[in-house]
Length: 386
Image (cartoon, rainbow, N blue to C red; front, side, top):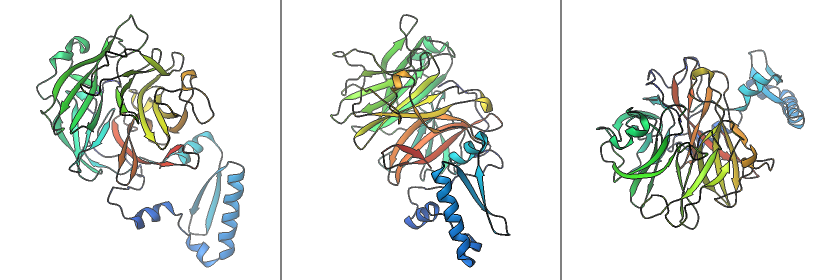
């Protein structure tokens, strides 16, 4: 949610950090199956009893909730129980998927255009735009407002940096909700722009959606547009203060409803750090993704992605244990591990090969990068990242 100085676009991931297997939308079923099926170790092929022993060890570990790492060291397979908190963190989450090109990013939001091009917008001067044809190789494509956005300067103090944009495609055009503020300030506003193509310089300012000041208990940044099953438009937003809010929008203009001006509370940590809401509809539920803890501290960032769900778009949202997200609830699905620090400010894209999580993370150097992984759904309809 906060501004970031332009990171060196020197690479798609931290040096020495192996990426997760990449599933581009064109990945074959065979490639996906190879990744999802555990390999048979060479020694297991030659000695069936070893394979049986490994299977038994895995079953016992699962029963005791232990985590295993299985390796072939050249002398036979090794089964190692992972016990420490650090080891569990390394084993629990995947690395970001492989991306190349212009991969420096902060607060990404993504859409797939009707022509198949992927567009990512991020926090930065005049809202930077990146594009890709395969969701792997990314290039800079200018900014939404190359000539600046003077209507925002009373909130930014004259800075050109605009925060946490949210891009989507509806009704034959692109919608861009974005924030204007300064670090640590509640004097903030969310604006809307639209474009026929999503390209740099084609965006038209449609006006201010909502603002905040010291007279309210929320911060009007980090917007996300969501449309419910009946076609009603809603905007979620919020950062710190009293948490995540929701307002109703007019579907015709994309601006705030004049008939329903309620500000609903859908997630809070009692003043603790929570921000970057994103609501995604899957099956019979609306899933509220948020980021807990702190971004914008480089490799010391503690951001992590949490989720809850509700059968109603306005809540109540509860986590996997039934704890209300208005009472600090949230089920963690992604956190820092190894050289991946502070993953967060998530967005979900429904793509041809499944549901995709976009987010940023920090390398050991402190630079922020674009993270992309697939989302799976378990038997209880809860999301996980792989």
